[in-house]
Image 1 (cartoon, rainbow, N blue to C red):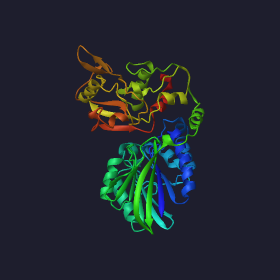
Image 2: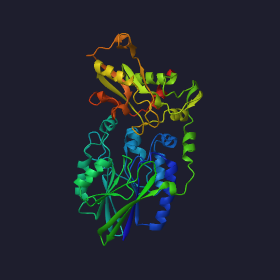
Image 3: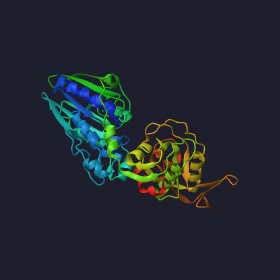
Image 4: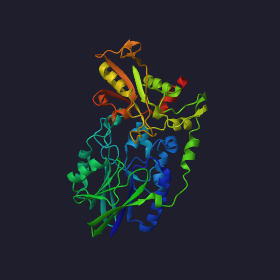
Length: 438
């Protein structure tokens, strides 16, 4: 007997692709009837899409319902781009199971969602376990815990191992953690892998564990075929379907989202220019808003944040969303004067100005130049000033900036500095709060 597992991951609200996947899965359900399971591995919702923004992800849940999703887990886009209460109610209308072994409320000893689910198909019992990536400081800022994923996965395996015939891991941990899982837990028969946007055309093997992954943005839909003799799993293989080769469906969700975001942010708003290599009125205003919102001494951001220009006039939530579509939060970082000067010296070189950035919550393209607020530089003295006072190397200062700068290589000074992440407001929500600054 054969059982088919269809899987999607990291759709990121690319609904024009997902609608093709939905039609494809409808056909597969007619073909295989009860001998298939469809699971989504998270990051289906991305607030860069107006429909997701307007419905706070509930529209994505309804689309998963329409696609016949059986089980889903959460990615970081569901977990840390929504307020805590919005995540708690996100799946209220779901017709599918939601599982995640390592997400719990701060102070709780139990997962918020079920850690696993057992499904029986033609007498064969499947155990599905899920876990999500440990973006610990961001979850903590929202009142969640996601640490110790491997320990929670081990606990789930121990609980179900003797009860099921096949264990399927639904992972939003990333490729390298999934490879470690396969080596550490040979009890897992299949790992459906996601988060790092990788794909395996015919799966990858580590020992007897099959890893399957379907890339990003709905470019592929994955299929794993499991063959059984009686209740014994004897063969398994994976493949991908390229959605470019699937028949297309009309994507009307963008227009629905646009219409739902017609609320006026500001009447007679000035134009917003997209100037990647120079400052503009709006980017300077945004830097000031960032400093005020984070209650910092100075602020730092980059011009590429302006994804689209605005001609001026009535600024709606939809217009502002097009200008700032990013899933980016702000952070207050404590630095010594010496470290702060190092940061601004590095920023002034604009080494990343031509880089095309993918991920880190950034939903634009070219990085652009750095812009600061409340920082002065006297070139003849080679000294930086805050509020007219020379920066003291030994004094501590607070810098308001973007969480995306704390993820990687841009500013190594941020790695071990004291950080307070300001959650869950995105930049566009900060603009609404300080609209009088426009």
